[in-house]
Image (cartoon, rainbow, N blue to C red):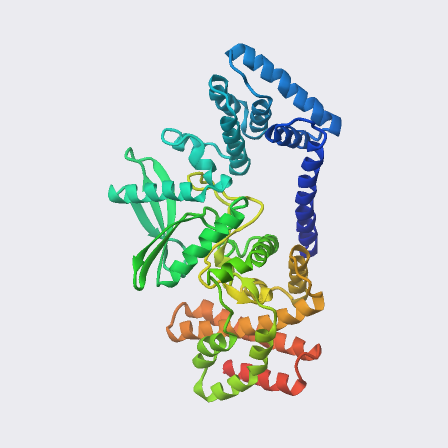
Length: 494
């Protein structure tokens, strides 16, 4: 039986709280291990938690590691540290004993604390990667280091490595380029190959104006802030001049929510909202940094609605439209402005679990990877939520949208009451639906995909009318205002 949306949301909340609980448990176990070396403590505690040991079991596990460290030391004639055994044991559980022995071999020959740190980062990487061929591909040039650089937070080293791979293969013509399916922003996949013809790293190339310079810097900062969960694409380089720029990122493997929109939309959207909540928390906690570097500004709601909606509807309706939407602009402008993604739709959300490829950077499976930060700005968080849940092909009821809003509320650091968030969501939803009507009206005039766009256009108008009616029922707008607004929207259908 298919799970209900409420069940999926409750499962996600339990999962998020469980992750916090697991971190606390490892920390608690660590306090039982009176060992000076922090790597050994962490490794032993993590293993004990993984194996569901008791507190005393954590101590026994460390004693086991000490015992085998002595044995390895006597066999090799050089010192092998207990933490090395702890970490190799962890890798054996996660990726198999043969790989663990491969890792252990160089440390028996030349053990030192630097190597122990390196193996810890390697295991951290493979805990998330869960696939081994990448190591084999990198091994001749950069054994393990390249693959762990992002997890280490050594972004500059990884960027230099990938930029070298990219430029080297382009100079040798060891690459192919094709448009990414469903892309709306001139984004291409660049596949690279070794000199022998075997597959190499894949990249995403985005072409555009000078606004890509700011997007590239946003990606750099975001990678620094959330590289451990890989919530964003990894930026490699930016090049170009005037209005011809090329932004290169490591290709994100997986499928977008748009590609699977008819398969399991509820489960996908629940995960996407949880991912958005993580992004919102990170952006909000670091908003001063983005503002100091002038990487974000406030959304200009008046300009956005005028440019995309009012200017594209029949000229006879424009004056009324401007008058009837003024209350909407005023309300949204007065709300607390927080950093938002700005274009959070199903085409910009990738589930990295849905791939069988290994020749790309690894991404955290517990969250989606969120693409396209060109429109990042300060606005209402609810604008991002509306952009997703109001997408024309989802057809969520208003109660289901509220459930998803509650999930976001549960997972974000926001002092607003749910009633305040619901009201902001309604205003954001009305704005977004009217905005999408304007976007699609231009495509309809250009005769682009008539059937699909006409259906979506009608859906957005219907959703805007429904939202206006709910706002009137809740007393957010006067009945007369609602009458004039719905009359205007109905006129667009003719």
